[in-house]
Image (cartoon, rainbow, N blue to C red; front, side, top):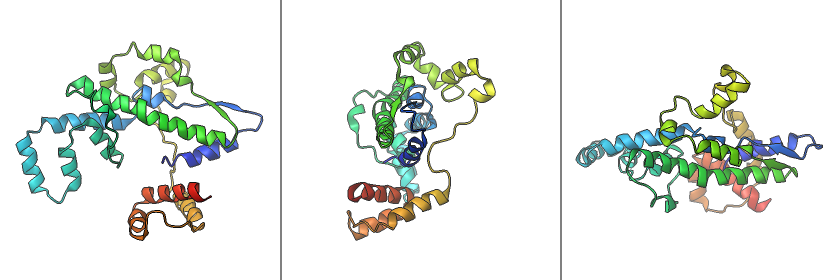
Length: 239
């Protein structure tokens, strides 16, 4: 459950009632390799695979209490690393067959996952948020012209680009400026602790029943992200 659905709902609701069609920038990160996690997962997986198996075993024995380090060292797939960075388990193994342990294939596997698995969930979120306000959202980055442009860029160009979404930013700089096109990215989600607390307090006040049992929900409550997701699921189920 993507927590950014909440500000997405608020944003859609704030649109002027005379405007029924809006544009979304979704798809840009997935198509133009805009997520830093893609590169983090790629380089970490490459480095881990350079470590000999015997040395990995020794490191695991020496640092037995470091569970995260052990998971990294035992990663057999680049998506294992990607999921660890996102603090989730890798359970969708439909991408396993396309994975080969070569430079370009490793990078492409991660990018394909973002495009073919993660992006649809983002589009579903935007669709759900916009429908509540009777809005139609169009996604120009998924047009055929953009796809044709991307087909001319090699995987290696994406791997070695100095900035994420470099090719998209270059196009934008032609009609704006470099300072605007290359300004730091800011995510669209909760940016302050008090925003999370406000939503959490509101959902807790509903006193929804347990769905996982006492022990499981007490354990989930220790993780802020997991807890608010649980509360949102309850809100959806029992509202």
